[in-house]
Image (cartoon, rainbow, N blue to C red; front, side):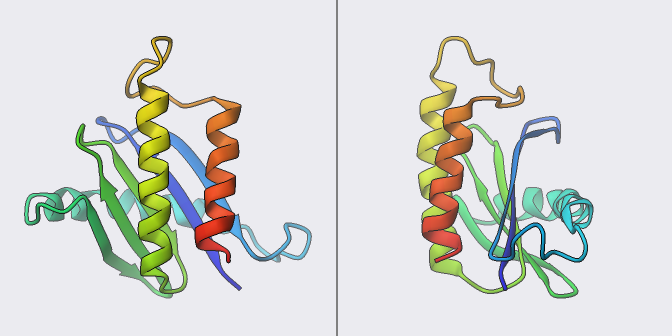
Length: 139
């Protein structure tokens, strides 16, 4: 069983986009971990900000751990933070997922009708995140 919570966080620590990926069907899930995942991701923001100044890499890998949950992060060139809260190690898959989502985010942010640092409500962006999540995180 694998669970991933992906969130894009803006400049003011505001969530821009969030998505959950899981190998367990929603009907079979006994409890919803979304609120816990949001809490863990928000608590890790300070660590992400600390780590981004210590390395030139955009990919920060696993920067925090809370019980069985790991936190991995990616910083864009414009300082938008991608965070994944996950319960198993999958560094290569997470790296590929971050790179694909970064490319998708860049294309979306170049849209003249999108204002940077505002919530992403595009169905195509959602669909692409779902495709990349299944391809890199759940396979």
